[in-house]
Image (cartoon, rainbow, N blue to C red; front, side, top):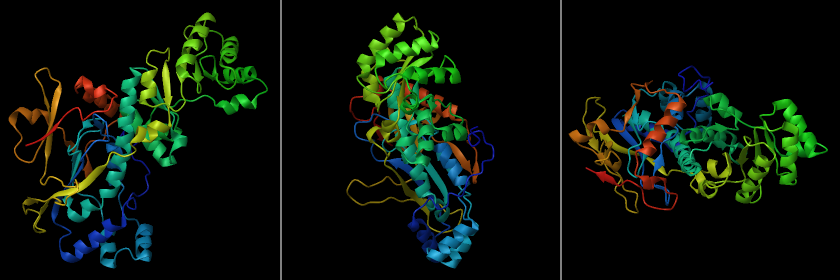
Length: 442
């Protein structure tokens, strides 16, 4: 079960070491300098979308909440830091009592975003907020990249089911996160059992070529699988000769055969030939599933083919050429003293080379045109215009250190469909282009 998304207790190890060395040394220096407790605001945003992409997809928010909740320095972690001389004893004492007690607001999971969108805002003392930079970015950058690729593939599939099959093409822990992000982006199931267990995502799978090769004949393999899994199973038909395999599959399982899978060759040509053959054999309801290193462009090229579902692996879990969303975590406001009531002052990096950021705590809204279709992402630091007050995008995620926005993964998945449908039609074009919405700063 998806115990985390259901709000049930989960035995999750500490996430405190999912961070960079310099986050802790900054805390040490700030503690010594008397600035560690200055109230501060950090924001997560990206300066640009991956080249050619029309929109981004927020994914990983639920995992961020888990990571923040479990960001604690246990005795063995403190001893590791002590042995390595990472920080001094006063800092270790401070870390021993660390719990994030601030606030986090952000775009809800599944929402779309654009350059400059304040995807997440973290407010608290400088020390408690800066420690979360690396883990928040590592989650959002990975998951949002996969979700964006998944969303494009879902558009290309035109409503046909998408099966996530990328576990063997990435790190074992990344595979679980990728399956979750793919589900948010529009995939219907995963082959990864850890993802199914952790996040309650439907899991699928039958057999590989090794199972066919194990048997003396292809027919023997099909017979064993049908006896084990029933006639509604999916038989892999491209180990030897596809036409002979399809004939044997129908003879073994009958017209009730659930599906056949094609994993190699000219998928467009083979899908048409297999569909014709299945129909001639009376298996008109037997579905055709294609795999074989698909991406959104390959899926789109099969739009006119008699394909019922797609299995995607490598290109999905690597973001279809863009494995990161290039998000950053920047200090945008801070107090001038450690007085908790001291006013916040806008701050921003001023260096050249395209790495400048906008100072101040920002709000964001999506302005619609007269027909209700989004026409701009509006980002501001002052008063929210009255006409945009019911269009604000950031929601409360954590208040006073307590999670307030735990939700089922299906909610984020459904939210993404609504968000994508609210964009101009050109958002769904796979051709390269600029972000479908301009970002306006007010």
